Image (tube, rainbow, N blue to C red; front, side, top):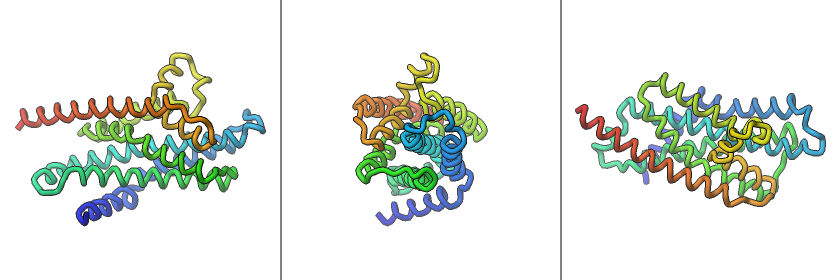
Length: 253
């Protein structure tokens, strides 16, 4: 337990205190977008729907922040560790690999928790957005747990050794995924083929269920099934990629 605690503290310093660029994109950008859309570009929203819009858009920007932290911050941190050989070093020591990945995942969950609290603080201060204790707790638990499939995508992205290629791939995946999942604009305003894609996206399920829980609405079990199915699919893909990488490294050596 002492070893895991030390790893957790080291990763916390690296993730939260020494990585300003990642914090900026995953924390400050969602806040900026939230203020832009709810205070500047809200003229077309009828007054009676304004409060609901401000609450829903808060959840959307929190989901956007989670996507950024998983596909950029988490992936970048793992890739950096791969570059300096930390996973290889762990394999020749008695330290279990699960401590390493659990430490990384715990820190990214803490970052997501910080993002949720900051965006909510801004929404409450600027737009007087409030939730009941039950609504906020259910929304919080769902957003943190349902984002786990995205962590698997982050691990896969970290397998790309070239930093420029990894950054380009993250951008090419993240922003189309965010758009097609309806985080910036409602899906019903998009073409039909994009709507069909968006409804199958794990990001859409995370966001839609988070909004429903935050508003005290009925939870649709199809959202949970979407998350579970994506988790299984991505886990299988990750295991296959890991086996392929190990075979390639063995053939090279």
